[in-house]
Every structure is written in C-alpha cells, then in structure tokens.
Length: 86
Image (cartoon, rainbow, N blue to C red; front, top):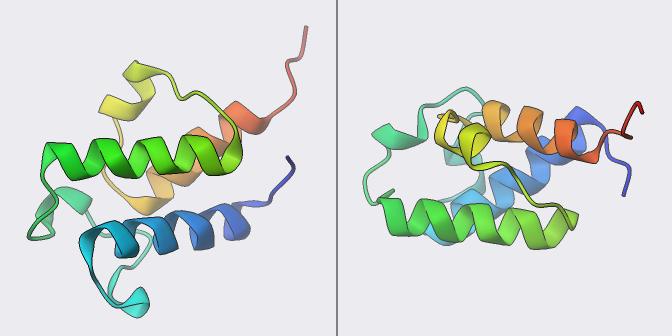
C-alpha cells in the first residue's frame, strides 16, 4: 500500500479519535497522545493494532514505544510502508 504523509495522518487521526471517542477535529497531528484523557495503555495498543491492520504492516516495538503523537505514528507507518532498499 502506498500512501503519503497526509493520507497516513488522516487515517491515524480517524483511528485515534474513534478509539478514544473524540471529535475528529479535536486531535491535532502534533498533540501528545499521552496527554489525552482516557488514552491508557490498553487503548493505545488497540490503536496500534488497528493501524497495523489498516496498513497491513507490523510496527516494530521499539518504534511504537517511542511514539507520542499522530505525526510520530505516521512517520513510523511510512517507514514500514517504504520499500526495502536491499
């Protein structure tokens, strides 16, 4: 699947707001997800799982543990979607 950064951000935002029960326009790409009320570790894992299924990727644990915003998630997804240079 090929997607640009803006497309990935849009999908990730939709998944995040859906899981957290928020309005779509209430989550900016740069907001720290850990600061959103109700964004506990279980919900974050569900968000990651839905993102992996949507984009048909498996995100590396070390990448997932380093994310804090929608933009961060989009960058990790884009990295996973990039063709292997080897």
